[in-house]
Length: 459
Image 1 (cartoon, one colour):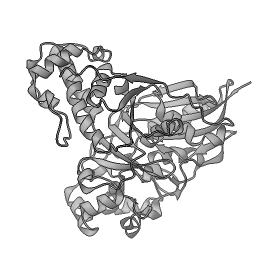
Image 2 (cartoon, one colour; image 1 turned 120 degrees about the vertical axis):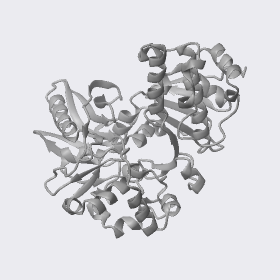
Image 3 (cartoon, helix red, strand yellow; image 1 turned 60 degrees about the vertical axis):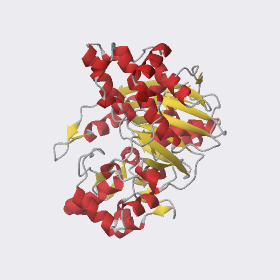
Image 4 (tube, one colour; image 1 turned 90 degrees about the vertical axis):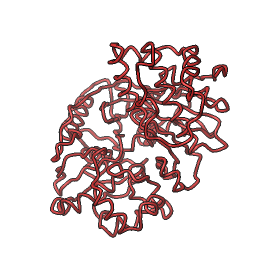
């Protein structure tokens, strides 16, 4: 008897994964792919859209042929801030531009002077000014710089909705993508911002569809439900919302370390926006106050620097044990280690440190984590409110003992847990459409937690 499952495509910047998840939320099959990046017309690196498209089709065809599984539904989660522009035949018109691509200063100035200034737009759309990371600005740029291409655009779909479109042929817009640092959504009015309709961009978006919706689809002779797709950071929050009602913060760690507080509905201030705070959208359409730093990316770059300097293999650092004595030594050796960070910084203090002051690679690595935690605590406190009693750390840093011990020690009044839902994004994406494929309610034991207590304060 084939096992009923949901197929979840979880597309990150680096790893593209397909999971099959059974009705008890056990991952029963996993497939992973990595693609070589390609370049856009300016020679800038970007996602290989054709590889991604064929991978989705090939992977789905493969699992549909497996006798041991019965695919009841399919859903998608991907990184945000990325638009796919389709013509009337559903063919992509441009590369999938990298959200880190430099944004032209003159165009930026033209846009904000037309629509009331950076602070006004930022506050109304709950989006810091992030250039290409504001995906609405990518579409504005296409209209101004390449009007002939813009005119051919039938649909501008965020990446999760594009993947859904590949299977359903339906163009959709979803609140978790539209509502996340795009500058497209007016959080006060709960609709597209007026600049979007004035520029005619809303005509290019698919039909607004609830994030927990799905539609019956026939593909390769099989029938199953297909979800509309979710922004990965919003998807990662869903298992926690399903399991915990006491106020918490989810610290989702990957390339970005994003602190998500679904229990803070205070409007963003201009000061918070300048410090990279923003609002994500809960899959049920509620604002989630968030702050973020680029710490996972910095960790990888600096880890390589340490490894090169000390002639060590970078992978050896992944399982380094926490050494409280080394932290004490560093606190005495580098006086600023004993002070809290008092202002927002895009990087930690570590990139400016001279590696020659450290005797060993282990010592340098402890200092890197020390510096990243200081930056993290500052970012976390921007969205922390009085009711929060727990912090759950999901993703890469949750497996890093040095990081977890230092985090717990830095906020002794709050319980700190590493979460072992390592595939929280995929599980959340499945939970969003649970009713479409699963006759059971969402289980209450899908999150295993490891508690970290603060080490004795010796600093």
